[in-house]
Length: 158
Image (cartoon, rainbow, N blue to C red; front, side, top):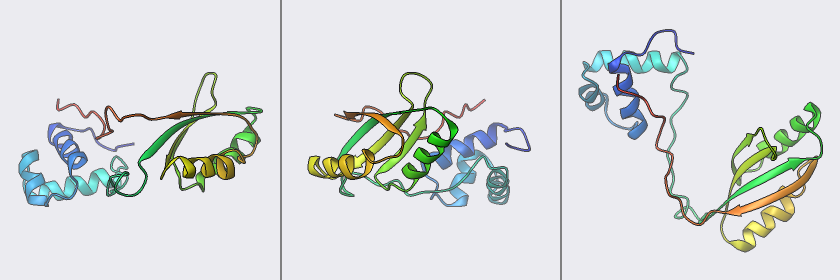
């Protein structure tokens, strides 16, 4: 939770950082309409407030050896807290699972999983996913094409 309200300069700065956080402070400052020192202070404050919670390098998954992506729906045999906790702890250590979300509705969890090829996915499914605790059902959906990639949150400029 932020300790101060975001003004227009903060919002411009956040949009710029989401597009490319490796820009030099001077360039970010110019794009946000700030001095370099004010820009640096604001970034540090946004980090301290937890609005910026880290920086990462976004890899091209195909060039990194993971051209296949699947969305896996998982349904547990019970929605009890112990079962959810055990499932979530087991998923947390699976490198192939990029994301996992608890859902409301017919499916309990949705996982985003990458694989090198179909044989790799079969191995992941058989040796990793199908062995998750308290699992009642898995449903796999192969991503055919990425239509829109996540590029950052929609930060309004006003």
